[in-house]
Image (cartoon, rainbow, N blue to C red):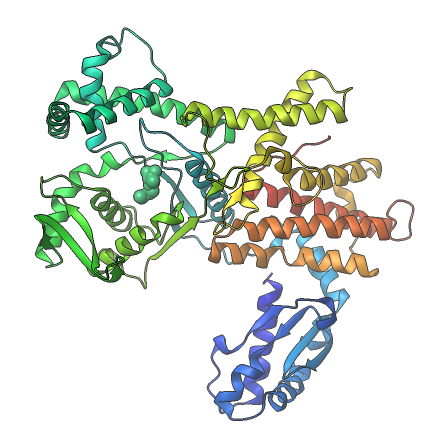
Length: 584
Ligand code: ARG
């Protein structure tokens, strides 16, 4: 089943072509939108305004002509209840409730709601989370992890092959510093006679950094250690591996807690590809030397002084950079991993970096923009209650774990108050779900371009646009189904028939699930899905307030509507990486 939006796009496209058989009508002239308010119908066609220039006619006359042809379309009677022209030439469409019912009945019984999402079957690489070894994993990485996972889940639902990639910062000069420091300060750890945590690692990293900045000798030594590491010195390699393992164990704890699957392809993975990359860029004439460094200058990226900014692909001391690795990684993703689309999820601050990487990769012929789509999905900051950048106290991975546990603890308090008779084990399990859901949803429901304020109190509320509110609507529906003894047989013998306005309203919104998902695959804004689900829960509550289910003449149909709402809610939450409960 096509999305509702597409149905109207096709219908209007045909009608416009018939009205103006001699004009060249392109698909993009057909502009259909969901109406902003019920008064203006359900969908609105704005093409008359767009066509006015092309056809040299006033938009209202064009709208008239389109309406006439629209009435001649075969599907008109089945789908449309009423059309009217408004304002300068908008065409407002009111859908027949019988048509909505028909679609809902298909959704009820179809695989994946019979959305027949234009099953993409592409190879999509999502580069997300990507913390840096030994340095702090901060809330920005948490945000990337949560948004990235939701985006992966959506494409997986569409049937795409998704590669979830952790571009861990596990290479570079920082390691020389750390190795030099650890050799001096904690030799016992290096001999593996002493366990150590990622928090300790962070402390050593900080101490090493200070020494590096203060002591010329130490700086020199650090450089030697990097050179040794990069040329394969076995001892340094072993230390490096050890450091990576400690950090990875800490990340893994967070991923497990959040139920995130991701595969490591750290920066070090691309190391062997860097030299050949520079050679290739050189041969293609893209490299210019500036202050002894090998650079690629890309038009359009300027600093404050108006000078064109370079990507530095090799420093004057011969070392490679973040830029070099990203170029190599993108090349690998397209040439070897055969990606049809590559999506990067980091804070907005890296937007320029990726735009430049995309441009340079195209210039070098690594990416053909007609074949591979590149997206940078940037996000805003996480703020504390004081409006300043949110910081966990010491900033380490451990502290990020504490942050998630704190949400779970708060959730537990709320559950103890609301359902004191639940066993403590039950309470524990529910708190885990509510706490983690709350953290994820608070992040996802905020448009990712914006900053958001981290607040346990707000994210755990039962009212408003929160995970718990949605979950509560879901649990309520399960309760209704249990009470009315809903079974799969109901699906065989009954049908949804919409009659009451609140019921039609809910039905229409359910019909819009597919186009919402479709939108998110394009704009990569999970907040569109959270908004959709929030409105769904509200419309369900309005329906349940206005329409009697139990014991009414419409019981059978309304029970199906409840079931479908529950399943769409559940599916939506799952796509966001949230879990549901059976009772609460
Ligand atoms: N490690 C980086 C950071 O912490 C993020 C990496 C993003 N991905 C990439 N391909 N550069 O900022």
